[in-house]
Image: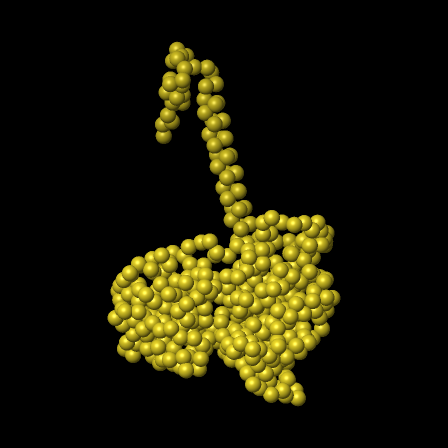
Amino acid sequence: MKTRKPTTSAARGSSSSSPPSQSLPLFSNMPRKSSLFKHTLIATVFFLLAIYAFFSTFFHTPLPRSDSDSDSSSSLLDLGGVSSQENPIPFPEKVKVFMYDLPHKFTYGIIQQHSLARGGSPVPDITTLNYPGHQHMHEWFLFSDLARPQSDRLGSPVVKVTDPEEADLFYVPAFSSLSLIVNAGRPPGSASGYSDEEMQEQLAEWLTGQEYWKRSNGWDHVIIAGDPNALYRVVDRVKSAVLLVSDFGRLRPNQGSLVKDVVIPYSHRISTYTGDFGVKDRTTLLFFMGNRYRKEGGKIRDLLFQILENEEDVLIKHGTQSRENRRAASQGMHTSKFCLNPAGDTPSACRLFDSIVSLCVPVIVSDSIELPFEDIIDYKKFSIFVETTTALKPGYLVSMLRKVPEQKIIEYQKAMKEVKRFYDYTHPNGTVNEIWRQVSQKLPLIKLMINRDKRLVKRELSEPNCSCLCSNQTGIINSLG
């Protein structure tokens, strides 16, 4: 077998980089052998490294951490005494809530005053009184939930505790929304002598004097103020608490926010629709029944009345709260494809939640509205949002709604049925549980604010601090159409 002479190859390889030589050195074949050896050695090393990496990845068992490693990490973080090696980190415990045993003048006493103002008689035991039905009954349902034994609350996201020292949060169950309407609708001169303003002042004085309020400056307290005007006189004194509100229409940015507080739904007053999906029995295109004349953002109602009241297939009526009007509204919502939900005195109104349980597709005309439970509910799946200026264009609303196909309406209805339990305060896993879930999610922020207060110098702020990020008070909702 012949061997190729190395001189030819070497000469070719060097011809491009150096002038041709007339003769080659005696040992000209040595560099070639050395280069071949180096290439072979490098390839072998890479092959061995590849095998090592393969076995390290798929067959390596990590060594246990030394005690010194464990000690050095746990010295920086407080893990609650749980060793990550000896015991797995447990699931987070449920938030513990303590409900204040308020003086009766802030709870059952208000029910009694409401009854007396309407001709009721005094009763020996005011705790036997029934809370009167109205759209802000959420304060009664939350109070009733925590008044039950813990054994009856096993499905709740929070645990009721009777020892305040065990509590993460403190619930203040004052009936502030009912207090507002004790004398509402009474003829001049027939007032009972009850004063909501005095109740607010007395509540704030009592609450801010409590040991546990002082300990945290109220950050870990939860106060329900469902009516937009509830506690309006003293909100600045209790604004550090988690406020349960229907919207932020009457709150300044440094009083309430989506970050600190929880938006809760009104208690619906319309009977739940139990029929089938579809539009066969829904002969009305668009329905609205409510007070035509409102203040502030609610002025749009009168403008919408003027545009819609003569439209075909549109039923729009002026009506105030009464048993007869509720029956008429229930009938109207159950037989309509779409239900108009304009702003009231504030951005939200109970009508939206009446629409949902009626499977009547909400048409929301309220640019500043905030909605409950939006971390888990996508309202665009069953509601139509229309910007105010767009809705006021003559013919726009009805033209847009008539173009919505029947199948799309059925999709909206199915989506509403899936979420309607979230707006039912009587459902065993409905609104009450969801409110407590939302409240429990505030605990990390609450602890942060309590710790900040311990080390920050108190000062007056010209702008809202980080606990009061602004809600949708200046933004515009994207409209459909």
